[in-house]
Length: 183
Image 1 (cartoon, rainbow, N blue to C red):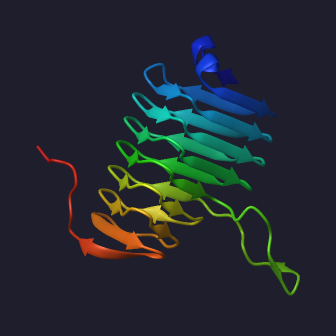
Image 2: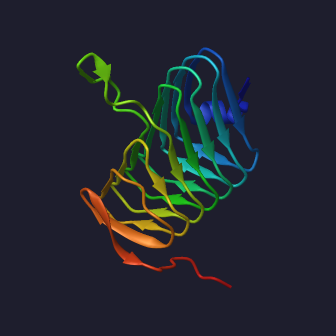
């Protein structure tokens, strides 16, 4: 099922080869994005009031699923890549600044003694997360609710809730933080 309006098709570059469930809420703003899907049983769900500007979404393989929650904001030149039956979840009210790269796979197999050692893994960005410019998030990472990832960081391991992580590779540098006003 392809559920892009005529206007959305004009404002974005969309190439889908195979079966893909594409469900974009009518209140979401998807502008200047490049969406490329090749494979079977894939899905892209973009929820209410999400904003994607100049984002590249690449899905190659079967059974890959991208979910973007309500009121998420994803900025220019972000690249979301899913391969090998993985899932990328970006939960409600999370913000991704510019030039962020998220990859559920290394993109190629590596073998040791005839056994694959670099399988693809899911990624989850929980609620109310802020990710600064030029961050890379690698396979298998979960970012806990309310956390912040500093500029130019590379996340190779999961981080908990309400922390700031920074560096390459990123490490937790502050705990018990909040970045949104709590009313």
